Amino acid sequence: MGQKENIEFIRNIRRRVAELRIKKGLTQEELAAKVEVDLKTLQKWEYKYITLKALCKLSEVFDCSPYDFFQISNISKNVRGRPKKNKPS
Image 1 (cartoon, rainbow, N blue to C red):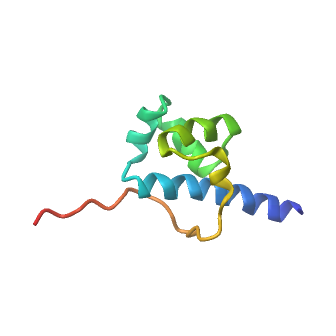
Image 2: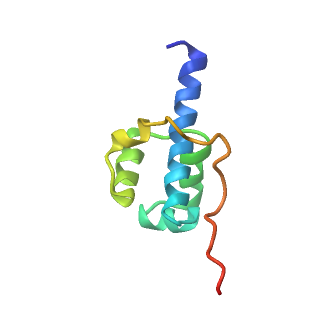
């Protein structure tokens, strides 16, 4: 893999973290509390860099294997923000 591909690979892992967080219905604040890190650390994981140790912590919350973060087949490039809340009837 070249440098460009490596960078895109890491971006996809970070997008996968955001995707799983939103799918689980968690805000960044809620996920940070669950993995016992501050919000700034979680934001770094989603936007800048992430370690294998972080992926292991997150895998416990998402009830998946750390390897699941590498399955990046259908990740949206625009995964950001808060999960959608159901509107009351």
